[in-house]
Length: 489
Image (cartoon, rainbow, N blue to C red):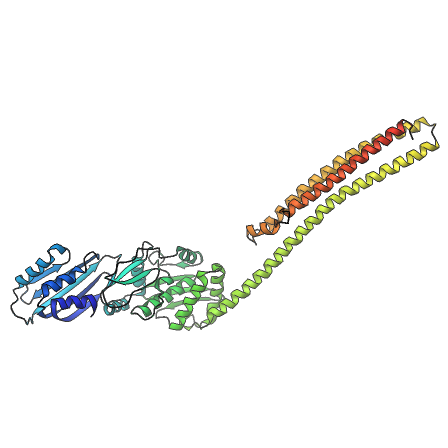
C-alpha cells in the first residue's frame, strides 16, 4: 500500500496486513503488529493530524491475544497525543517482538462524500457491485447537481472533469460548480423513457475524462458508453447488471446487454451521443440515429454494432438538411409568388377605377359633343334645350355617385388585400418559423417599408390622382352645362 495508509502503518511499527476492504462509505484494514515504532507517539500523532477537518472518522483498535484492546480516534485532536501515550501504558508492552498483537483500522465518511485510500481495493469493490448500484452511488455524489470533490489518499495525479474532481487529500477542494447540463436530461426525457431516471441522474459526460492512464479509466469509459446507449434508446431499464433497451427506427430492436461493451462499440456509441446531444437539431439527429443503428447491428446485439455507423447517420443527416433546404426554398418561392400576385392585384384595383373613370369621361364627352352640335343646328327648340340640361344634371349626379362607389370598392379591395397577407402568414406558420415568415413577407425596401405598406401606398397614390382628375372633369362639365343653359354655346 502507498501514501497515507502506508505512512499510518509505518507510524505504528512493522505490520503485516491480513485483509483490507474499500467501498463508498469506508475503508477497513486488519493485520498484525510485529514490532512497534520507537517513535510511535509522535509519528502516529502527526499522521492522524492529517485527517482533521477532512470530514472523516478514523478509528484504530489495538488488541492483544489475551482479549485486552484499546481504541484510538481522531475525534479529539487536543488530547490525541496523551491518548496514544495512555494506550501504550495500558497495554504494558515490554517486549519488542509482539507475536499476538493485532490492529484494525476503520475510516468512515458521509454518503455525499468519497475518499479513496487504496486504488487497488476500491477498484476491486467497483468490480463486485452491479451496474445499477454503481450508477446510483455516483449519482449520490452529485445529488444536488453540484460537482463532487473526491479526495485521494493514495498515490496518483489529480484528474477531473465537470462532474468529479479526484484530488490529493493534502489539497483544498475546488468550490462546487454546476455539474449537469439539465438540458441533456430534459432532451432525453422528451424522446425516450428511462425507467431508472429518478435514481440515476448522471449523464455520459459525467464519466468522460481526457486522461486514460489512471486506475478508473476503463471502468468509467464503460459506464459512459452504457449511458450513451441509454440516451440513444427509445426505452431503457437497468436491473442489476442487465441493461434492457429498445430502439424504434427502420426496424425495432429489443435487446439486453449483460456484458461489457467492446471498446470499438462503446466509442461508437459515445461519439453518436455527442453528435446528437451537443449541437444542432437534437430531435432530427436522434431520429436519424434510431433509423441507422438497427441497420448496422445483428441479432439485436448492440456489441455487433459496426464501426462507422455514425458516418452513415451524418450522411443521412446531410441529405435530410439538403431536402429541408430544398423544401424551404420552394416554400419561400411560393410565398414570393403569392406576394407578387398581391402586387398585381393592387395594380388591378387602380386599373378598375381608371376604367370606370375613362368610361365616365367618354360618356360625358359624347353627350356634350352631341348636345352642342345639335343645339347649333336647332337653336329655337326650347324643349330640347331643357331636356339636355336635365339630362346633363343627371349625368353629373350619376358621375358623382360612381365616384363614391369606386372609392368604396377600392377601400374594400384594400381591406381584402391586407387580409390576404395575413392569410399567407397563417397558411405557412406550421412549416416555417414565425419570425422567418415575417422576415419573408415583411422584407424591407430601401424606403424601409413592407410589401403590404408599399402596395397600399401605391393604391392610395393612384386613387388620389384619379379622384382629383374625376372631380376636375365633373367641375369642367358642370361649367359646360351652365354655359349651355345660358346659351353661351
